[in-house]
Amino acid sequence: MGKGAGFEREFCKELSLWWTEGRRNDIFWRTAGSGARATARFKKGQRTADSYGDVKAEHEIGKPLTNYCVFSLKRGYTGKKQNMKLRWANILDIIDTPDRIKTKPAIVQWWDEIEWTLGKAFREHAFLVFKRDRKEKLISMAPSTFNYLERLNSYYNGPTVLVSTKAVCIITMPLESFFNWCQPESLGRKKRIIRRRKK
Image (tube, rainbow, N blue to C red; front, side, top):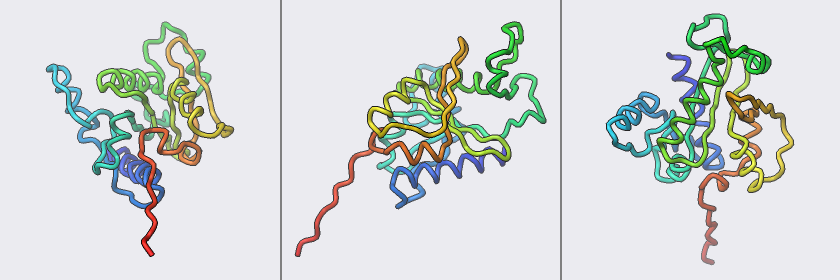
């Protein structure tokens, strides 16, 4: 629990710095209960403002992002301590696991969850951010989101992995590469207006 919470706090600071071009690290923070309140209220037919997924805007300037996107954060899952209902998998496991195996690879289950949340939150785009132990942070998105961002940003020529099966279709890249490539304006941030000082 502590490891996951620490990862969420770290990501929210990184996201804040990216959104503000290094000016502030407190724009986004963890959603209480990882969006559990929004899920519970949805079951009662009620919507909950800015409480979907694992990231919420703590400041008004971050609302355009969380009103437009859903973030799901996952940490750990090396496979050493396997949960019978959640099995981490590499690319080959995702492709060659027989249909008769009921336990889905973790990334497939995570993407199922985030797509469910995306539909209930009425957001345009979803991002899955995860980090295995002793590995770098990665971010996954639907091909439609990647294509949308590539139209608005420069051509992306960094490392990517495309997984396309009947269970899941996502593009994954290093989180650092994503931050270097994607401009906040392409996900709803208003362009900064630089006011000239009066002489």
